[in-house]
Length: 275
Image 1 (cartoon, rainbow, N blue to C red):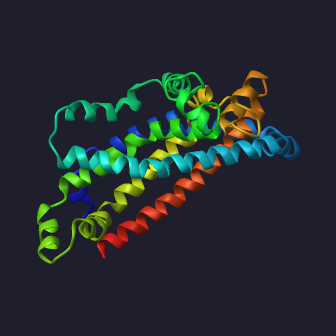
Image 2: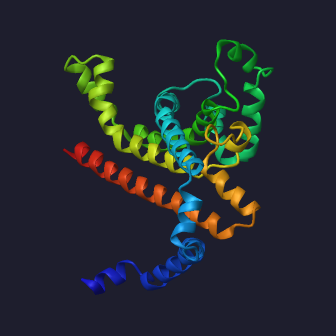
């Protein structure tokens, strides 16, 4: 069997070694360097750097805003993916290209645009601020810009599943007397669930590490609108490299733990769909 596998997949050893080498250079070695740098501090120094009231507030805001943005991306991304797959309309190609705009647009530009739109004298802010809705220099601003960054992940993960979904399944549900809403909820949505969870996970992971766009719209006010990556930058500007590495290790730990949890959720959703 091993000989057969080698013949079917030639160059396995070379490709595996090549992949592991580049993975080590790009990810494993830098991560190890961060951990080693943080390990140069004593326990008290680590706690004083990573577990201050200001740091805990930043962690909570980062995780909470990322979760809210990823969750908001689902009801916003599903209709976009549905329209792109199921309908033909003027400007479809333009809309399809605009979905990928956050991938190509520098995040700092996105933050600058959002902050200019939602300030008190901005196009949207002049109407929203009198109503008490502050879309700039607030937690709402962070969620809005993170949703903009994460929305394409939901659209692009759901879109291929919708394209491969057989129309006969919907026709069978209609023949059995199901309404359009029942067909979507009981037939289509369960098939989309693994893709939706994957899109949510990707959007959430992307939002956790976002810095460029948020720094323009949040105002960076400690205990209110300051995200955790700002703490890393502040420590670097103060030449506290070990402290910055310690905060980065905390963020890595949070990201890794949450991604493991989300992967378990993906497996659970896949098993349910197969049943």
